[in-house]
Length: 228
Ligand code: DX5
Ligand code: ZN
Image (tube, rainbow, N blue to C red):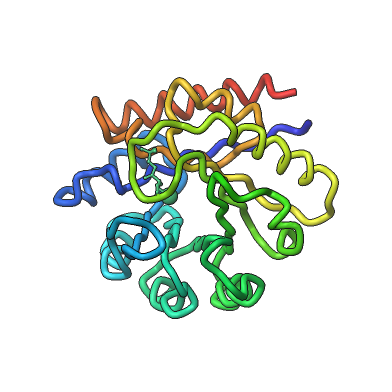
């Protein structure tokens, strides 16, 4: 299997919001290729986080792509506002979109990378009809809503399945994984086929955020070299 480039996407959900720009800069210095922005509405998931104004502030502070993970109901209503604020990638949940094809085309029509996300209980098969539209698929390896949760091991099988499908179709999409990705799990997710690794607690939870990013990137790259 051809190896792909490993990218670390620190989730700012676990950062100190009063020092967001400083934290963002630290992880970029550590090699983060993009920043993962978790948007929660208190309806689709049992938590409320941030909206377009924070994305706009981050956009002024850093140059890397902003990967906005919308854990919200009726995302079509808010996608243009996130695009205006400076989002580069926008992902929506399969479970939250009645007209998923339309929503993904809306994201693409704004010139952004479009991603679809599936919860741990949602099978890969629900994505068959959109794999030729999306730029990336985000496999949730925890139930969305909170940072710092335990990685769900069954996610590895889903990533492997997706990776196998990817090898058989003409269009290409990236595989992103989100939830409980840390030094203990990074090699497994990469060997399964993930290439964009969202890490929150493992980067901002303890220690130095720059150093943590460097270590995760190194471990991810090493695992990528031995992928079969
Ligand atoms: C969960 C979020 C994740 C989360 C990741 O709903 O989508 O991005 O912040 O955090 P960790 O890496 O701590 O599981
Ligand atoms: Zn996320």
